[in-house]
Image (cartoon, rainbow, N blue to C red; front, side):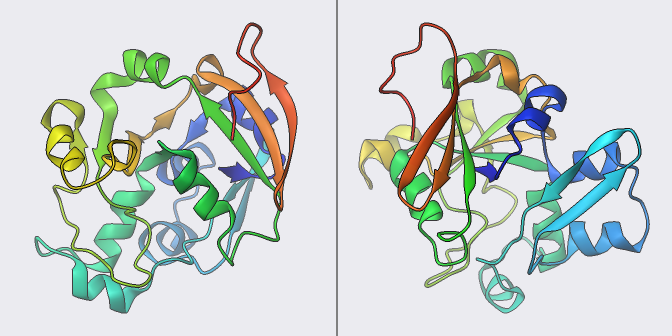
Length: 214
């Protein structure tokens, strides 16, 4: 789920983490600290001459007070925001994607949805991929504990153990890639504009089943 209309820029420049975007746009002052180490109650548009603007998404589903209660390993809310901002995030089920698309903060805003070839992504970026059993960017309702072991390399993740506790499709909540995916265009198989419950396909890789998408 990406900012509406962002596909051309993502295609040409990659899908980057917040920290990687701040590096690319050479933002190193107090604005960077506010974006990278504090909760973002709104989206930020960043600019640099010669490249398209980028939108850094908000973090409305989190709160500092809830994080203070659920963080472990001596982490502070600022530490957690920085951990999240160093990663790009992918949903692994349509259920979780649609839940976010339908959330109160986003349901009335058009979004761009990218469908990814997971096998292709993992084969190329295996060493930078981690898995999480929780929605790490939300503390709504009953915030579950989180800490330095929330994100685990694929070979350390107890997939079968989580399958015993949840439906198989929910055994992994998130797949993340540290820093970002500069070659994301090689792994995207479909792009849709989402508005309300309506979807419009804007691009699809040749030969991909027409039923694949959000």
